[in-house]
Length: 320
Image 1: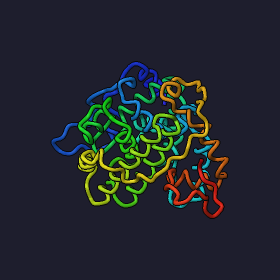
Image 2 (image 1 turned 135 degrees about the vertical axis):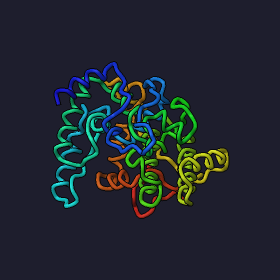
Image 3 (image 1 turned 180 degrees about the vertical axis):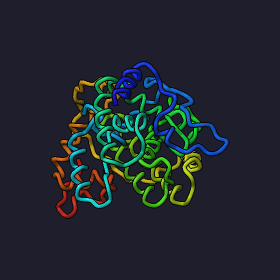
Image 4 (image 1 turned 45 degrees about the vertical axis):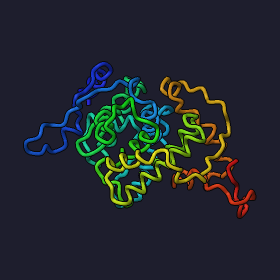
């Protein structure tokens, strides 16, 4: 562990060319070991991709100090009641610690080491450097490491050329990068894409027209995937349909509750607007109530169809 603490300090100014996760994967005969082929600094990566990844993988990234203690406690209590083993909740910083220093094994001892290393990394490296390291080392598909590899593999683009729709789809792959987007995994990814789109709209990065267009493209993409297309082909096919009438033109995003953003202390949040939706979420939670709000968040259903009449149905609250 002391050696790893020293390596964390080195990561302040040196980019790794491989990670522990890479070394843990078997190398096919005749193939070279996995390496990070191309490094992109955070200021060169599309802000859409940065924001989408943060909202998909670690909603509270700018507010915690490496570990989200409340979520970790809930996950630990759930694991104690489960017979299916340990299932943790990891922040981006914890994922980075695991990728660089540890292995994919699911043990409590590894989880404890991950937490200790994440705390040290957040304190020593800061949010910007943690994000840069994560985006350049995380796995996006079998043998595809880092944002440069992912954007070239799926889109034939560099990381600075990714638009918001593409960023949202790429971010939804991270929980299961080697699993095909079919069945339950496609449903999970689709819900994640809706959720991330919602947060980016509330952050002010998308207006109403852009969010409806983005959501329509997500629907078209998932329809292509449901037909059996692989993601690279689905990206190409969906791109040919851009400009056609929206598949969900009757979707209505909720109005923003509060126009003024908070004043976050962290530079990443300040630069990318990652905390601007906090008051929006508080206001919407008050409208729906804690139980209904939790169901909406978990389902990813953040948009409603345009009502056929002006009156609310069943006495349920509607978004303004």
